[in-house]
Length: 116
Image (cartoon, rainbow, N blue to C red; front, side, top):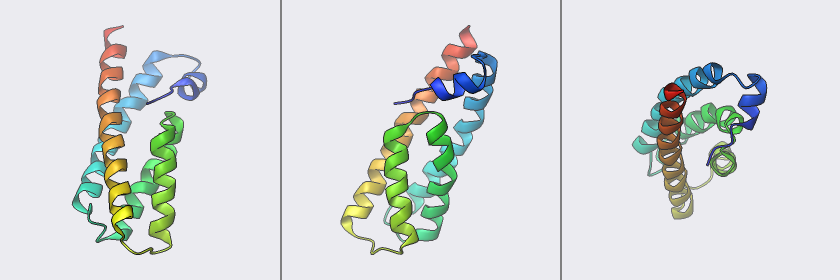
């Protein structure tokens, strides 16, 4: 789900830099997951938008392309104050699932980097 090539290139392949960056992302992902979970029915588009917007550059940097693209779509729908259709709510749930999987993957990457 991730592609750390961008981070590795930026860090000149220093695993300590990558590790520190991933450790900083983890709490952010958890905060965003909570915000989306609390608004999973689409009731507060502003909070959803803020959470999506906060994750956008981070997802791009760690190469989580699928989650990044879905986040962009949802962010646009929030910004346009689209109706809270069932499709929107379903896409929001899928985004939440992708972030949860990403969180697990980052946990594993952190463990692997710490073991080096």
